[in-house]
Image (cartoon, rainbow, N blue to C red):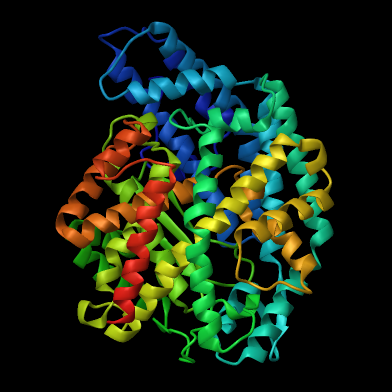
Length: 567
C-alpha cells in the first residue's frame, strides 16, 4: 500500500477524500490474480473499514446530541466531500474484481451482491443520496426537539410514555392527547420533509433506469430470495392468521378493564390495575441486570456484553436533544458494536436492551470474517438475531437469575412481550403495504392528504380492536411517527419475517434451550456468507411467507400466553 492505514479510525475522523485516495489508487493499480486475490481483498477491507467506522462514529455523534453543531458539520462534510468519491472508488474496485472473474470460497454471496450494486450504481445519484441523508438529519432534529409541559416540567415525548401504563385512565388520556397534539403541531414540517424525500427517491429510481423506486430498493437491499408479491402475500397471511389473534388480545384487555371500547390510551396499561413494571432504577442497574441475563443464556454472549459495558459502548438514557429510537451500529476497525437507546425505566427498555443486544452479538460473532463484504448479513436475518434474543432471554428475567422481576412480574412481562408480538405483525403489514402503495403511486403520494387517507384505510383494515373515533387526524398521520418510512424506506417487512423466524427459534428453545442457542450462535457466525433460506436453516428455522407457517407460530404464542396465565 502507498502509506500506512490507521489502526484506530479515530485518527481519520476528519479525513477528506484526498486522505483516502492514495489507498484506493494503489488498489486500482495493483495486479489482481489468483495469487494476489486474498491480500488484495484484505487491503481493500482495511481501508474500507476505516471509512465505514468513521461514518458510524460521526453518525452516532449526531444522534447522541442532535444540537451538536460540530457533529452535524462533520457529518455533512463527510456526506458531501467524502461519501461521493468514496462510493465511486468502491464501485471501481468492485468492477475490477467482477471483471477478473476470480472466485473465492465464502465470497459467493458478496460477489452476487457486488454485481447487483454495479448494475444499479449511478454517479448522478450520489449527491441525491447526500441530500437524502441530510433530510434524515432534519427528521431527527424535528422529532428530537419535541417536548411538552407535564405537571410543571418540560419533558420529552419519550419521557411521557410511562404514563400510558398508569392505572389512572384520565391521566393516561391527558398524556396521550398532549403527546399527539405536540406531534400534530409539526404536521406541515413533516409533510414538507416527506415531499423532499419522495422527490429524491423517484429521481434516483429514474436515474438508475427503474420503473419504480421499489424496484431499485429491492435490488439495493439484495432481496434475491423473495419478491414484492411475496411480501404482499405475507401481509395477506397476517390478515388471515394474526389479525384475529391480535383482536383477541385487545378484546381480553377491554373486558378486563371493564370498557365498552378500547381507546388508544388503554392499550398499554395492565388490566389488573397493577402499577407499571419498574424494572430498574438507573442505567447502571439496567446494564448489570441485563448482563446477568445474557450470562444465563450463554456465557460467551454474556462476555460480549461485559466488554461493551467496560468499553463504554452503551448510550442508554433518554435526554433532551437526543435523537429518538434505538439502534446498534458497528465500529469496523475496533471490531466493536455500539448500542444507542432512550431508556425511561419501562419494561420496553428491557426489551430494547435484549433486542439490540442480539444485534451486538451478531456483530461479535461475525467479527473475524476476513473481508468487510462478508460482514453484511441480510437485514431479515439481522432481525432474527435481535428478536430471537428477546425470546431466548425471557426465561431469565427473574431476580433469581439476576434479572429484573419476581416470578409473577416476569410472567406479566413475558405476557406483554408475546402480546406485543401478536400486535406487531398487523402494524408491520400497515407500514409495509403503505410503502408499496407510495412507490406504486408516487404522484398521489406526493400529496400528504392522499398518504393520510391510505394510512387510515390500512389502519382500519389491520388494526382491529382499538377505537379511534374522533381522532381522525391523529390516526391519519401515524405514518409521520414511523421513522423507517422517512429514513429507511421498505425496511420494515424484515421485522415481520424475522419475528416469524424468532418465534420458530423460541419453539425450538422450549424443547431444548441449549441446542437452540447453539444453532442460533452458529447461524450468526455466518455473517453475510449465505443466503436467507440457508441462514434461517442454520438457525434451525424456515424462511417462509405462508399462512400455515405463520399460523403455527401464532398457535405457539397463544399457547404460551395460556401457560403464562396459569403460572
